[in-house]
Structure formats: C-alpha cells, structure tokens
Amino acid sequence: MRIIDAVSGMTRAVVETYRLGGRAVRAVPLVLAIAVVPEFLQHIMEIHLGMFVSIEQFRALANDQLRWGFGYAKVAGFVIAILAVARFWSIGSMRRTLLVPPMTIVRVVAGMIVGLAAAWPFMWLGKQGLSPAINVPLQIVSTVIQGGFWIYVVGALIEDPRVTPRRAMTSLLPAGIVLSVLTATAFGPAQALHMANHKLAMGQPLAIVWALMAFDALWVGLFAALVGSAVFVGVKTGLTWKGWTVRPRDLDAAVERADDARRFKIQPA
Figure 1 (tube, rainbow, N blue to C red):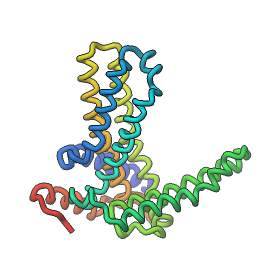
Figure 2: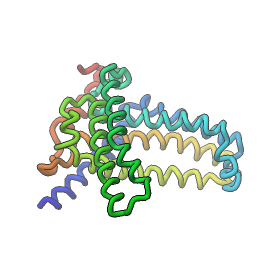
Figure 3: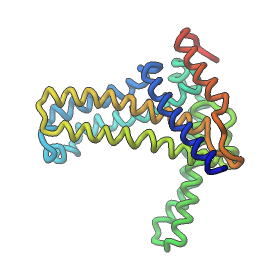
Figure 4: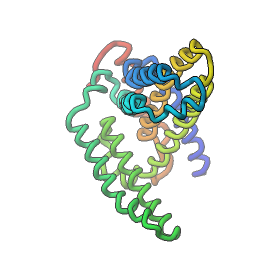
C-alpha cells in the first residue's frame, strides 16, 4: 500500500508541476521575462561572434569572456525566475512576489549559510580519499542535511510558516526526495530540448538560427516556470514520515488565490 501511495502521490505531484508550469506562462509573464531577456541577449552575442557557423566554431568560442559576461546574467535571471515562480504560486501577488520582506531574505540567507556550514565537514571528509565504506555514508549524511535545509530555504521564501528549521530536518525531511525528483522531472526534459535546439542551429542559414534562438529564449522562460512550479509543489506536497500527503487543501487554495489576484488585480495579504 505504501508503494502504491508513493507512486500515485509522485504522479499527482508531477502532473501538478507541469500544470502549474504551463499556467505560469499566462499568469506571470513579467517574472519569466527575467529569464528570457538575458537568454536572448546572450544568443545575440553568440550569433554576433559566429558561434553557430559550426560545432568547431562553437567550441572554440565557448569560453569567450564577453559571452560569459552575458552567461552570468543569464544564470542569475534563470535562478531568480525559478524562485519568483515558486513564491508567486504561494503568495498570489505579483507585487509581493517581487518585494521580498527583509526578514524573509534573512531567513533564506541564514538557511543557506547554516545548511552549507553543517554539510561542509561531511563534504570535506568525502574528498580525503577515505574508503567507500566510510565515504558513501558521509555523502549520504551530507545530502540529507542539504536536503533538509533546502526545504527550509524554500519554505522561508514562499512564506510558509509550517516549514520551520525543526520540521525541515525532521517530519518534512522526506519531502526533500520529492523536491529532488520533481526538479529533475521538470529540468531534465526541458534541458534536453534546450541543448537539442542549439545543436539544430549549427551550420544553419542565419535566418533559421535567429528563429531557433528566439524560440530557445522563450523556451527558457517555460523552463524556469516548470522548475519553479516543481519547487513549489515539492514543498507544499510531499512525503513525510507518516506517509504520503494527498494534495493538501492549501496547495489548491494558494493557486486559487493567485488566480483571483491576477483576475481581479488584487493584492492578497
């Protein structure tokens, strides 16, 4: 029964992730633009450098400093868009999504710092050439610690008061598994198409390259929407030590609140 519950629960979570990811394109296009615009600007630079002339040319220019300058902005925009999508689905207000309270920022940063500090000794020991019998358990402990603090960081970001440090490292710790699986389920196919689009552009006429890169920039927006939705669903629904939670009502309520805010242009508290 537990196995059936786990499979059905994960299936529901995956469906919910893709459903919300698609809806985010219409609900928060300005948030997704944070990922789309830097991506397209980097593609303009890549086309200007002639990177799509051939695969050899692309590899030769892959580490161009100017390209990487745009690349850093692209990665930052992608991560911000992911976190903003997750926050929007929880809060339901576009304005409050972007205007993060100072104490929320403090909790997020503190969670990241403490989580890395707690996991660092185990990661360090894992690099000391110890035997697999010792190293594997150390890496498992490190992963568990990071997973728990990641649950707390996301919970703090989406302002879910139920996700306390204690619960993140105890009853909610198995949700880290769900969060990881959902993120991989959203990230994997989107990244595969993203890479395939680049390969398809190699050696094509300039007009086709421009069309493919314009599509790719828009695709990155959907990419961010899917991963951001996966983060939200992974924290709001997930496995606990007591068993699988079946689509809690607060997940539906949060999405309905976001829909109402967008439809009636209100700012929920």
